[in-house]
Length: 386
Image (tube, rainbow, N blue to C red; front, side, top):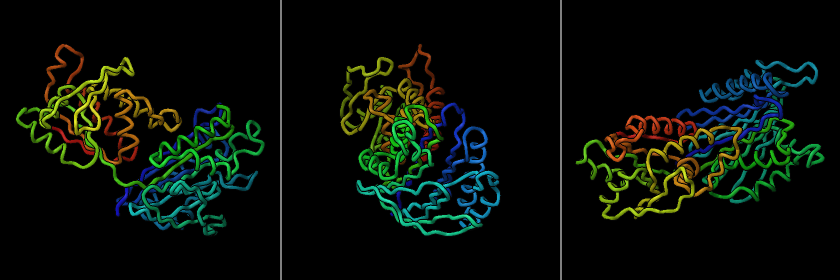
């Protein structure tokens, strides 16, 4: 069975630093996802440069199918060694996994990965190898839907040292927290943000180390189709709605005119909520057979803003999408609940916007940018124009 491999990460910068000394790099090559977390020694600019260099080398080589041993040899040979501590300037964790859920984890001097499966949290068996004089651990994995891997930099284990914890956040405590905090429906991004947020609490908002949580989760495909705007030719309404409804998964309709078209073709009516959760976002509507009905351009613009924040690895608060306004509900549907997103974008001039500062080209630009951001989240996105 072919799965969707979800991934997400959240990072906390060392207090006082503009750049994070941890770096995550991901690459897709056919059925394979390569996700790399590198931790540069120290903090600030130097650590950021070294972590970036390391993650780029590993991710590029592994995703190109170069043997793992050669990748590690190239990386270790490329990195300088600290003359004082006699250790490499960057450590790494790598998850190399395909859409069948099979692959490998490679770890060099980072905390061991944690597996979350059916509500239980456990360690993984690791095989010890020596490459270029360095100890590298390898784990062969075979995951199924719902399984999640959590990889971290050592900033997670250092959380709270000298503050709320005498010796930092010890591994049994981290596993216990994940057991309690991670819910079955959470995305990879939400899991990583939850763990990073707890680290920030333990650091009392003053992280003493760069801290990153990277999560890779195996999910069954969860498609969503979004109808935005009427087609140019009114005679195409029936066929357009038929194609929209024929796709599997959840359905969302954005825009007043779009809602009327879809309702008419489905032989039903649109009802509107008069509850203004957010005074800047119009209330949602209801159409029988449609999972979410919202206003158009204003709502989509807010969703785009939310997507920019969601993609920010340092903004763990942006991953909590629990408000009940139309924009946040649509954002949760697209960012958290969906793996595949299909946009149906009508290019007809909406006469409901006559006299307003809203043009068809603006709507198209919003959708194009939103689609681009969804792809950055790892979603499979298609956009159909009519």
